[in-house]
Amino acid sequence: MNKTKELIEQSSKFLCFTYNRYPIVFSKGKGCKLWDVDGKEYLDFVAGLAVCNLGHCHPTVVAAIKAQAEKLTHVSNYYHNEPMIELARLLCENSFAEKVFFCNSGAEANEAAIKLARKYAKENLGPGKFEIITMLKSFHGRTMATITATGQERFHKGFEPLLEGFKYVPYDDLESVEKAITDKTCAVMIEPVQGEGGVNVPSKEYMQGLRRLCDEKGLLLIFDEVQTGIGRTGKLFAYEHFGIEPDVMTLAKGLANGIPIGAMLTKDKFASAFVPGAHASTFGGNPLATAAAVAVLKTIKNENIIENCQMIGGYLVNRLKGLQKGFDFIKDVRGMGLLIGMELSFDAGDIVKKCMERGILINYTNGNTLRFIPPLIVTADEVDVLTNALEEIFMGLKK
Image 1: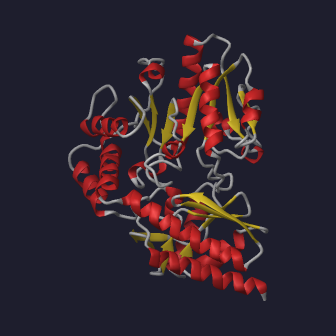
Image 2: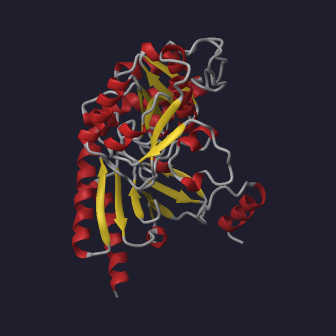
Image 3: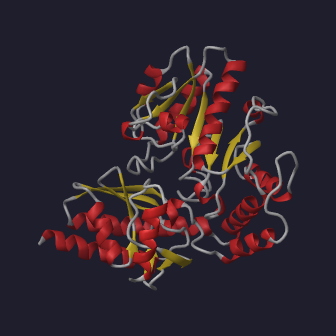
C-alpha cells in the first residue's frame, strides 16, 4: 500500500465527511508549487482557496511565525499584545477604517459584521431595524447567521429554520436593492466580486449607486472582502476599484497567508456599538496569527506584489480570452486581478480532474465556472503552463 492510499484510508476513518476531497495528500509547498507524500509536484492555481497570496512558505512569513512562536503564541484578550496592535494600526492606516475586531475566519468576521450592523441600528436608528439585504449567488460563510446571509438555497438545506431578517436580491441590480428596502432594513451586505457565485464582477455604477442609496436611506454598507481583500483583485482592497468606501469590511483568507485569522474593519461611529461584553473571540488577535499577518502586509508593500497581480492577472485573462476564440463552449472570461473565472457551457468538474492529472491544481465554482486564484507571486511562465494544458484538454474535447 502506498503512503497516499494509507493516509486516505485513515482520513476516511477519522474525519467527518464534510468535503469531497480529491485523492491527494500534500506534504510540502514552496512558492506556487506543492508536493504530495509520494513526491509528485503540482502547480497550484488554487492557493488554499485564495489564502496563500504570497505562495507557500514565503520566507518572510515563515521567519515571522518562527520568531513569534519562540516568544508568545497566545494570551487572553483581557490583555494587550504587540503584534495585534501593530496589525490593527497597519490595517487602519492602509484602508478607510478606524477600528478593527480580530477573529479567526471569514465566517466569524462576517458574523461580527452582522452583529455590529444590527446592534448599531437598534441603538441609533430605531429598535425595529434589523433586516440585511444580501445578494443572490452570494457566499458569506457556514455559521447559522452567515449561511442565512448567503443567497444560495443549497447551503440552507437541512439547517432550517434559518435566522429571521435577511432578504436576497439579484447581484448588480440597483433597482432590486431599492425595492427591497423597508422600515426594517439596517444594512446591505455584498461581495465586491462574487467568488463562490461564479466570479461575478459588478459595474462601477452599481457599486457607487449602492453607496448613494445606503447614504440616502441611512443604511450600513458592508463589504465582504474575505476573498477579494489583501491584493487579490489588483488593489489592496477591492473597494478601491469603485471609488467608494464601505462602512464595514471583513477580511480573512489572504490576511495571514494560511494561518487562521479574520478581521472586521469599520469606522469609529459604528464601532461604538461594540462595548466590552458585546462581542468577543478567545483566539482573535492572538500573537502568532497577527505576527504572520503583519509580515504579509509588509511583504505586499515591499515586494511589489500588487503590481505583479495586476500584470500577471492581465496576462492570464488575455491567454484565456485567446482560448475562448478557439472553443465555442467557453462562454465568458471575467474577473479582477488574480480572481478570474472562465464560464463553460458544461459542468467544469472534469476539466479540474484532467488538470490535476497533469500536475496542475485549479478549482471550479457555480458548477460551470473554472476559477483561477493562484498565489499573487505567480509568473508568466507558470501561466503558460496552465493555459497550454487547458488548450490541450480543450482540443481533446473537440475530437
